[in-house]
Image (cartoon, rainbow, N blue to C red):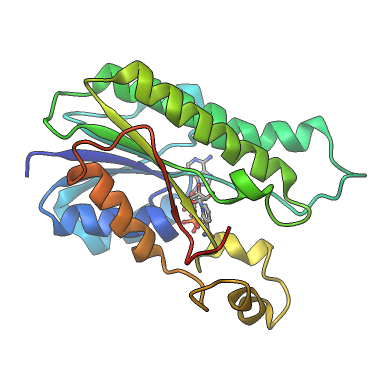
Length: 235
Ligand code: NAD
């Protein structure tokens, strides 16, 4: 398959799971992450089908300096949750730090992708939102929830503005068992307790989100502007 997929935040969790699926499908992947060590491990696992660059998506100069040869698809996956912050402590700096990565970073990477991309019949973008964008997020994580709501709106705007050349969709995962959850799941039984609030009775796996991303990227030619929950029935 003649596709090259840029995946941000590809060193861990959902991004790495998407990279594995892209490579298994015979496509190339360009992996960006802020962690060089994570990228080295991903490169060792996935081999010549991937190329990696250390890129902080909130750093315009880093984005401009990273190679994007032959890119056809984009997965805007990099995202941060931030520390738990109750309303009394919430300040502009906290909110800005999260929006710089989750929203401004997504926008800057999308602009770089638009400049560099080469055409492909299934070309498209998948943005990682969250059900937190609908439910406001876990207590103490309001800024994260707000940033993920912004991604839903950006997805609809991009889908309208980039049609018919590109399809743009978002995923809204529920509680997926990746390292990002460590800030929320601090109690020893937190994962078991969280599972009780999920209709399917368990946390999701990164590969279950990646499977839906793969479908949106390559197998959903008439789907654009949608946000699809991958949440085990949780809202
Ligand atoms: P993760 O923490 O396992 O992986 C995130 C990756 O992004 C890490 O490798 C990290 O180094 C990288 N990263 C962080 N900041 C970056 C930056 N500024 N530039 C480039 N890379 C950066 O998390 P995950 O669970 O795989 O999350 C992936 C995406 O899915 C995020 O956008 C997250 O908000 C979203 N999401 C996750 C869940 C969940 O429950 N895990 C739920 C809903 C949405």
